[in-house]
Image (cartoon, rainbow, N blue to C red; front, side):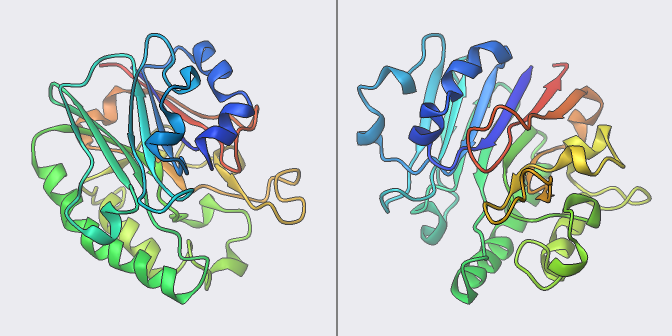
Length: 262
């Protein structure tokens, strides 16, 4: 099973840049999108967003042109969920889950705190709210793949300029500690596994998934790894490949692809 995750920074923008021309070549089973920035009324009736052979599901934000998640799947899911139970985040369309038997595939868009203190406060509320949900999922006995833009670089391997970003949202000590609690350490594994790091524990530059539009960040590969596929430990041994596609570019993020032997 091949799963691709991408913050598309606007599904219509990504489509114009060739996302849905590129997709058939990938032989993927699921495409998880974040930050679709579209309402259902924007997508309905456009065959681009209902490609043949795919089942398309979306959870849009109430605010137009903002946030939102989507999943394209080859198989029809057994069930679809799009509410976590907190209006602040449900109204922003930050979660979408498809279930196939005992497997759950989630598209998640965790809030960014880079716009200022108010958004950082919202992000911190999400972290506090979401941690016990992740614990419940991990203890449920289901296999989970949680794809998304987590807006946190976990360790200094995960961004180029880690020294100068220790006081910036996305690399704050409490954010990284939150990831530590999920993933644990090699000596004491956590309830979740970073799918990319399971195969590439020491790679740095090849793992970046987001680059600022400022300066020449992309050209100089001054990036951040903030997009992950976190999986329950039951799936760790099933991960066969994990890659980041720097090109072609559909947004300021790069697609993250993992292959699972399921």
